[in-house]
Image (cartoon, rainbow, N blue to C red):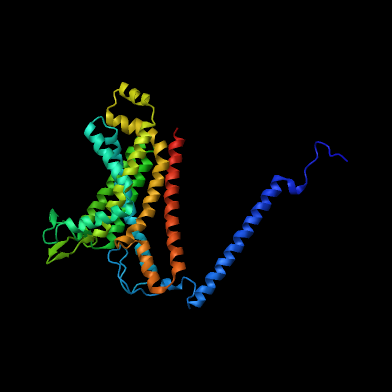
Length: 382
């Protein structure tokens, strides 16, 4: 009997059924692969008399990391060592991102300049540092700084409080952690108030800003009288080194220079491409109403270019964070360096690598989320 034109095909020929079947088969293959590798890992760990778990994080570490922001010392738990590595990674990443963005913007402006010398020098900067491998640049800057920097006795001094030598940069710091917490709270509060004032009416915003400055004055008076909380430790030259203050190590400087200079070359081209993507008629319109070059750039060009710049710029920021793992080449105690030391001491390779991967994933997703929110806000403004 001939099938009429409107009849449905058999169930196994329907696209929905075939799609579900393909997904089930893929899930089955992945499950089998996971079980296979898990069983092999369990057998290999048992053969080497190694367990599996994260209880090792509460064991005592016998190594020293040098510089860290969490006060890690030999005898502390392994989890605190990992925390010290994470803070070091975040510190060098944030510092390099900010500095690379500033340098990248300056180089992009020079690249678009009508000055032949500025345009040529910026082109040379971009072509050299963008095409030399990052690892070589990190090693070069580290070796260059330690070899040609002044000795501790001949350290370059600024106001007798900042010292630059081949042992790093020594800077004044607060002696009490409570002072940093209070300053951070103050800064966040002021930023939130000023940001909120942008959404208020002009009169209400003026009142809110007045309250904010009164709050700032009270905090400054409190700082003046509470000398114990805000006591400052100033570095002093002593023998062949320094006493007091804090030291920014040559490893940090070499890594930060490598990441900053390498990434800024890419950022410069991204910003230049975004600016060139703005219709030149917008610049002419801004000039016709009397806006100067800087005001035109800040108020007209960059806001429109941001739609083009933000997506690739986010990729550069993510690459910078991941490239910071090259710090292991010069001994800077980032999360990868700390993880390798923990693996050597405990033998917990899989667990430690899994933790490091999760940390990098969390940092990358956080940066992506923040930039996506910012990009959406720009697009929403039209």
